[in-house]
Image 1 (tube, one colour):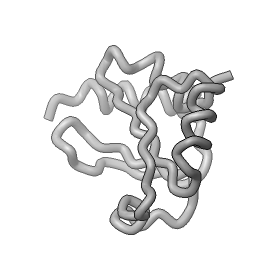
Image 2 (cartoon, helix red, strand yellow; image 1 turned 60 degrees about the vertical axis):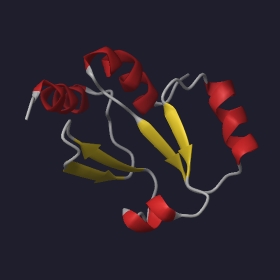
Image 3 (cartoon, one colour; image 1 turned 180 degrees about the vertical axis):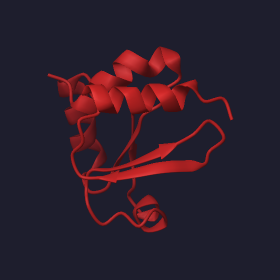
Image 4 (spheres, helix red, strand yellow; image 1 turned 90 degrees about the vertical axis):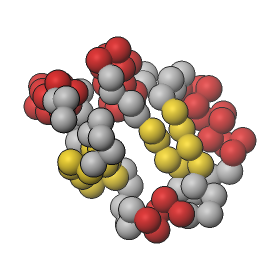
Length: 100
């Protein structure tokens, strides 16, 4: 079964939702096997040098950063969230509807 964020990605990608998952710890082959076994369709990046971890001051996972179409940070969530729930979907749809 896909993760919550993967399900939301599959549902909203045609509306412009882009999910970039950043793996902070595992080696490339471990991540590749996980992505393949779970059928992940979103982009998964590796942070081998911990640059993203440092830049975004990530202390806990999962950490979700919501970035608008202009590249501005509009929200941040630490820990598990119900992105596939009604409130999560409503928030994401509203953000996707914004044009500026």
